[in-house]
Image (cartoon, rainbow, N blue to C red; front, side):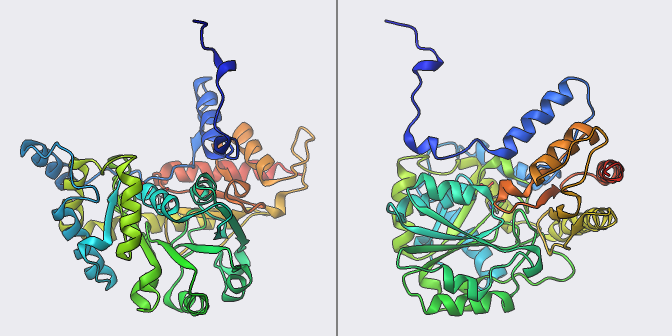
Length: 407
Ligand SMILES: Cc1ncc(COP(=O)(O)O)c(C=O)c1O
C-alpha cells in the first residue's frame, strides 16, 4: 500500500467554495510574530475575557457527581428546555413549548441545523452586510446562495425595508438578522425591526432567522427587541437563536439554543441526530444554572464593556482619517478607514485597501485587527474590545502613532 501524502488529499467540492477564514489567518500571523519576540496585541477575539461564573461551574460539577454523563434527549434535557422556555418567557415575552425548542452544541450548530434542514440548491438567504462570516459560509455549505446586502455606517449598519423588499425573489428562503451585530455592534430597536417585519408579512414564503446572541451586551439603556415577540403573525416562521457563549462567558461549553415552529425544530433535530446527537450533558446542566441563577452580573459586565467601548470609539474618532460609529451593543467597533487609504507609509508604500491597512498595522504597530472585507464590507476594520482597559489603551495609542506617520 502506498503512503498517503498531502498530494493524495482530495477535498470535497463544497470545501473549495469556502475560503480559509481571514480571521484565523490573521490570528496565525499574529502568533507567528509573537513567537519571533514581538509584542502583538490581538483585538480580534470573539469571546469575553471574563471567566464563567463560579455558580455555573459548580452546577457542572454537581451534574457530573449525579451521573449526568450520558447521552441526553436529542434536542436537550427536559430540565434545560424548561430553563430555556423560562428565559424566553421572562426576558423576551416569547412563549415556546418544549417541542418548539432545540439545544445544540453552540448557536453555530443551531444555524447549521436550520440551514441543512431547509435549504435546497439555489435557495437564497438574505444577509445584511457586514455579517458574521459563519452565516454566508453555512449557507454555502448547505447549497444555498447568500444574497449580501451592503448596509454601511451611514445607515447605522442596519438593513432598510426598501433594501429588504428589493432583495426578496421567488427563491428567497430566509432573512438572517443579528442584533446586536457581530461585527458592527449595531442593534435593531423595535422601531427598526417593525418596517422589516411589515415587508416580511407581504412575503409569506420568507422565513426569519434572528440571532440574539449579544442581547445582554447593550449600552445606554438600549432596549433589545425580538421579532417573534413583536408580531404574532411572524412567529410561525421565525427561528429565534440565543446561547450562553457571550453573556455568560461560556464559549467553550458549546451550548446554544433556538426557539421556533415545531416542524422546523423537528427537521433540525433530524440533522442533529446524525451529527452531534445532542449537546454535552454537563454543559446542559451548567446552562440551567446560567439561565436560572443570578443575573445581576450581566449588567455589571455590560457596564465594563461600555467603558471599553467608549474608550475605543473616542480613541479611533480622534485619529485623522479614521471614523467610528458608536455601537449599541456586542463588543465590537467597526471603524471606517477610508480616510487613510491612498496614503503613504514611511517606507513609501501606498495603502490601497482595508486589508493592506490592517496588515500594515500588524507589521508596524503590533496591533491585530480584522479588515471589513472579511465581513463583506471593504473600507472598514473591526476592533474587538473584549480585553482589558490597559491593553486597549496601549493598542489605541499604537494605532494613532502609526497613522500619524502616514503621508
Ligand atoms: C453573531 C453570533 N452568533 C453566534 C455566535 C456563536 O455562538 P456559539 O458560541 O453559541 O456557537 C457568534 C460567535 O462569534 C456570533 O458572533
